[in-house]
Each structure stands twice: as C-alpha cells, then as structure tokens.
Length: 59
Image 1: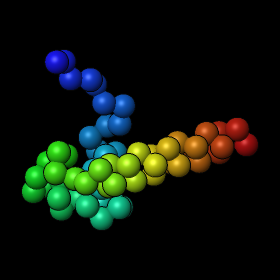
Image 2: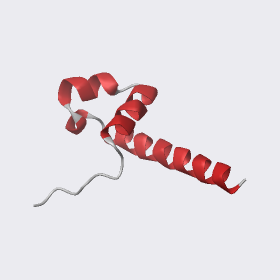
Image 3: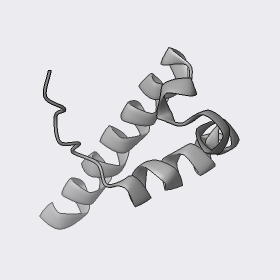
Image 4: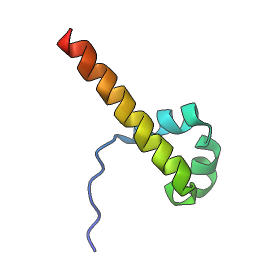
C-alpha cells in the first residue's frame, strides 16, 4: 500500500506534539507510538490554528 503524503509538515507536527506534551513519546517510539487520543488532539489543535489564521485573514 502506498503511503499518503501528509498534510502537515514534520516541523508543525513536532511543534504540536511539544505543545500537547507527548513529544517525548514521538522521540522514543516515533509517530506510531502515540495514543489515538493524542493524535486526535493534535488534529483538533491543527484545525483550531487553521481556523484562527483564516479568521484573521478575513479581517
């Protein structure tokens, strides 16, 4: 199965992981080591940031 190209950059994902407090797990185990809840929270936070940027652009 071919891997899909990610929407978020590696740097952005790392920043989110640091902000949400599970970057140590990413460093030790890779992205496959994070909990589903952490992955969901990361996506939720990325959406919040995107919405904020979009709202600021409209002003």
